[in-house]
Structure formats: C-alpha cells, structure tokens
Length: 337
Image (cartoon, rainbow, N blue to C red; front, side, top):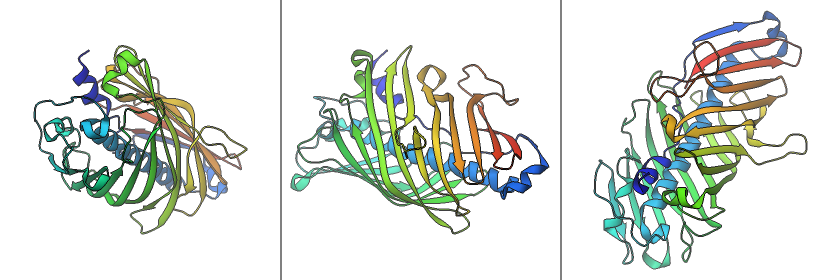
C-alpha cells in the first residue's frame, strides 16, 4: 500500500454519531429500576455521541501532528494540495509546502501552525461546515507539543485543549458542547504512514475531566483513559481499549456523570475494532456502561436485526443496547451508527 494512502485514511477513524431508533423491546418491570426507557436511550445516545466526538478530536489532532514535518519529525512529507481547509504557518522553521496532508481530512476548519518563540502550537478553528453530512462543528482545539519533541519520538506527549467546541447533529439538531484538556501520548513512537514497516504503534489518551454541556443545559464532567493500538493486516487495524481500573472494574474507558446526574463508568468490555479494509468502520467491540440503577451492554458490528454482519463499506452498521436494571427489568434497543 502506498504510504500516503495509509497516512491519509488512518487518521480519520471516527464512528458517525447520528443515531435513531430502529427496533426495541422492553419488559415493563424495568420501571422499577428508577430509569425510564427514554432515559436509558438518551444516556446511551449521549455515550455514543460524546465518545465518538471526543475520539474525532483526537483523530484531528493526530492528523495535524502528522501533517507538518516540524511537528512530526519526518524529513519530507510534502504532497499535492487538495481540499478546502485553510492552513497557515507562523515561524521560521515550518515547512509550509509540507502541510497539505491535512486537506480533506480536517475538512471543516482553519489550521494554524505556530513554531515561533520556541513553541509548537497547532490551532484548529472549526467553521461550521457540514462536510460529512452528519454534523457541524464550531469552536477551537489547540494542540501543544513541547519544543524539542517530535510526534514520531517514543513517548512524545501533546496536550489537546478543547475550547467551546459545539457539535450539532444534523438529523435532529441535537447539540453538545465540549471543553477541557486531554493528554495524548505516542507511547511507541513512529508515524502511521510507516505502520506497515513498524508493525504496530501505540497511542494513549487521558483526561482528568472534560466538561460536556448537553442540549438540556446540564453540564457534566467526564474522564477518559484509552489506548489506541494500530496494527497492519490487509490495511490498518485500530484496536481501542480502556486503561483505567477503579479497584472493582478494569478496562474503563470513560467515567463521570450523565445528563441525569447519575454516576457512570463505561468499560470497553470487548476491544473496539476499526478496519481500513472495511472503510475504517467500527466492525466489532463492546461497551459495558454501569450505573447504580443498572447496566447497559452495547455490542457493535451488527445488522438491523442485531446479528453480526460482514464488512460493508457503505450503509449502516448497528449496535444493540441491552439494559438490565438492578431489580431485573430489561430494555433492548437497536441503533445505527
């Protein structure tokens, strides 16, 4: 595979966040759990949207860090210009001609690289474009890499600062606003364009708390702890796992408080797999979301009937959410992604 094809597509590994009800079944005893079916569905929808959009922010940071040689450390990563993204450079050591891998990947933003005054700062300003058809984004993400480090270095660590990033879903106008910082580390070192040669690359993402404001005005804090393992098998394969343990459960990827004020923790109970040969779709994996009132098990890579499916490059995959209340009530819903 050509290196620039790997680099171009590997970065954007994001699940579409548009969700709607396809089918559901319920046991009326679930009312005894303290959670209505509507609340269970809303919390599941929030989990998917916030997690997916947080991952999309990380994908954009990865794209930007790989796109400019003074940040990535690559000797020469110039390619031809395409796409609509505006790219700016400030400072004397930035290779302006080497930035254009970003075009078409971050398709809804202006990206500015600043290497002046011994700093390495990338500013991504989203402009509200609807380039993928599923959502719009406005707000700013600032990626800071310590001077003297390059992203290809083992244990290179960038800070991702999210500032008033509003994401609005097209199908129903539902919005969330994200603020806060994440720590992003290239544990193994290496660039994704070299994955076929390297064999594997490991990134980690952690946050002591991002603020999420939901469309009902409620503001909540979510924590993040994930590993992203890249391997190569007929193309790039990304395996996402949770890395936090609270002493009771391992493999926790996100935890905090949901829109209803209930504490939750979301485990990646089966690794979430994204494959290049499946058009970089989420093809398998499972989240287990635990609250005081019950547990939701969310299984990915299914068809509309809730059965495991093959590897389409277009159309919808589905996930099945099965909620079990502490008093034994159950609720099941199948949703597309």
